[in-house]
Image 1 (cartoon, rainbow, N blue to C red):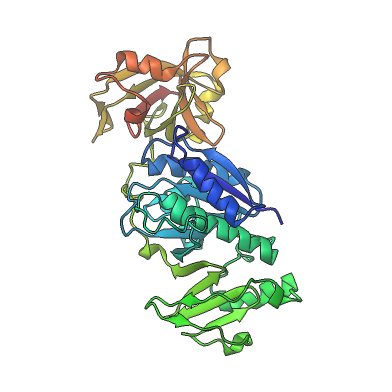
Image 2: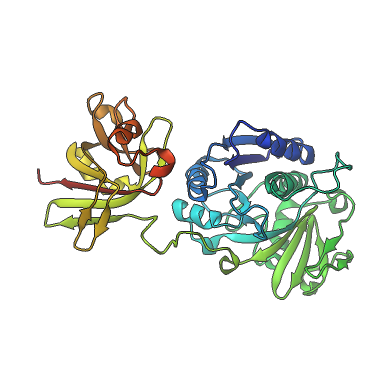
Length: 403
């Protein structure tokens, strides 16, 4: 069964960090393919990294592990998480517990209550070929924690031959695990369970004591506080929270309330947009710049659906950036302003003209046909601005659909 790891990070390409992580994955699971989604996420920008992953989810194939490492808190006690996604998305996310998962769910419109979440307790060591390296620093969890976790999960998935990953009724890690595992076993029809796993692993409890393997039992005989072998799964139930061992990868069940809260409150308006109608025909949208792409186009947090009617008529609008929306629908202190055409695509306006158009994942862009919107912005903006400093900058767009 082919397994793919989609690898996203802020490591950049100048150093050897990406290569080291991929070597660790290859050593653990040689037949797993790794697709580099991007390693050019701006440094420590968890929100933008989550946007890239969320926008990719609809296009991946089955059996995909999303390894996402944007980790400003590396070296601290923050945990690693593994999360299985519900329908219609496919796959597993492995990432630091720093708000990344919550942001992905926000951008992909996934109810996080439908996501199965685990903390990563232990993974294979990546230092199997460097025994003299007795001690290392804690600055590279991509290589030492997350890469090995992704590699071991991929290896395990290949070994058990599981083909239905992350469907709500067919998760690799069902919840509750014990209630649904029997159905998975029936589907897989594993005839030689003893041949699936390498020698029985030792599983360590949260208190640090070792638990020995017990003989396989029927599901009805599973008892909290003991370890049980069911096919390729090892289950540990303590305090009504399931833990599982997948080879050398040990996971502890978690809830959304256990996760680190994102830096931006997702119940606030900062990652959203406001769309209002003033009088009968005058409309405005207040939103934020999420990203500036390679072409200099500014991706904005408002959906194209707010502009679809105006785009049909190539409506002229006013775009203001860098100000503040006050009470009474007044926008004050803009550092840049321009007229633009709300339209269906870049080429619907003349070369060099500004436009607001929908992009390939449903948001709007501020762009210049065959030009660079960021460069034009930076010439007039005070103080001078670049792509990173434009991130989360306020945008105010007004237009009249009656004209």
